[in-house]
Length: 365
Ligand SMILES: *Cc1c(COP(=O)(O)O)cnc(C)c1O
Image (cartoon, rainbow, N blue to C red; front, side):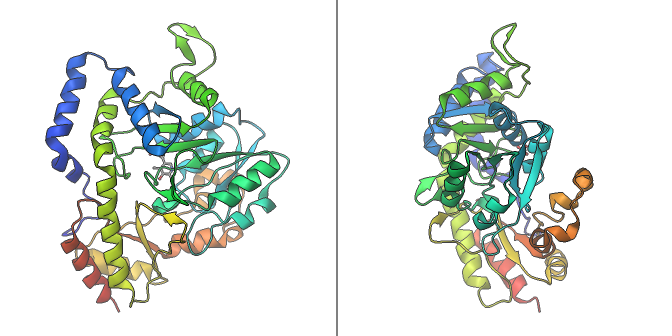
C-alpha cells in the first residue's frame, strides 16, 4: 500500500525518545504489576476525562465485562446494545450470562437511535449500553433521561471516543460507568492491550479495582471471585506519554476529516454527519455508498488502504446463532455493514496522502 489505512509504528517513531525513557523507567524500577505508574496514569486519565475515578485494566473487553459485573448484571438480565457495533460490546454482555438486546442506529450518525430504545425495554432490562461509534458521541441526554425514568444503568462503550465531547463536556462520566480500550489502533493506543473504566461513583470504581485483582484487596484474602485484568505498568507509562499529545493528535485527525469533507462533497458518497452538539475525535472517517465493494477494490488497486467497520453485524455472526435473530430483523445494521468504508485516518497520515486518497476517490466513476 502506498497509503496505508493506518501505520501502527508511526506514533512510536514520532515519540521514540519519550517512550523509550518511560519504558526504561519502568524496567529499572523493578515494579512490574500495578504500582505508581498505573496509579499515575489512572489519575491523569480520570482528570482528562472529567471523571472522579479511573481504574486501569488489561483491555477494553474486560472494561465492559467488569463494568457489568460491578453492577451485578448477569444471568437472566438483558442489556440494550447497538445493532451495529464491534462485537466486543455484545460479547461483554453475553460473557456475564446476560442477553444483548439490539437496537437499530440513527441513519445519519450510525449511533444508537434513542427513539427506538424504549420499545426494546422489558422487565429483564438492567442497563443501556450505548457505543460512541467511530469517535462520535451517541446522543446521551435522551438515553440518560430514559434510564433515569425506567431505573436502568447507563454503561458507555467509549473505546473509540478518547477526548470526544457531548454538548461541550468530554466523554468519561455522563453515564454510571464508562469503558475504554487502549488497543494500539485506538486514538489513545498502548503498545499492546490495555483498557480502563472511568466513573464518578467511588464504590463502583472500588468494585472494579477489586474484580481486576482476583477479588482481593489484601494479598491472599479474596472477597469475591475476581479475575486477573490489571493494566500493565509498561503500558501505563507509554499511555502517559501519549496522553500528553492526544489533543494535538486529535487536531490532526480533525484536519484530515475536514480535508475529506471538502474534497469529497461533490461525489456520490454519503459523508459523516456531525450533529451540532457533537465534537467527534475521528477515530474513523466512514463513508457510505451502495458501490462500496467496487470502490474498495479500486482504491486497493491504486494503493490506498481501506477497511470495513464492520462487515458482519453481531446478530449475523455464528457466535450469536443461538440468539436466533433473523438477518432481516435488523435491516439498518445489515445495510450499514454492506455499504460503509473507512478511509485512511490517523495523526501521522499527512495531508499529502489525504489529497492523494481524495483524488483516487474522485476518479472512481
Ligand atoms: C476496540 C473496541 C472494544 C474492545 O477493546 P479491546 O481493548 O480490543 O478489548 C470494544 N468496543 C468497541 C466499540 C471497540 O472499538
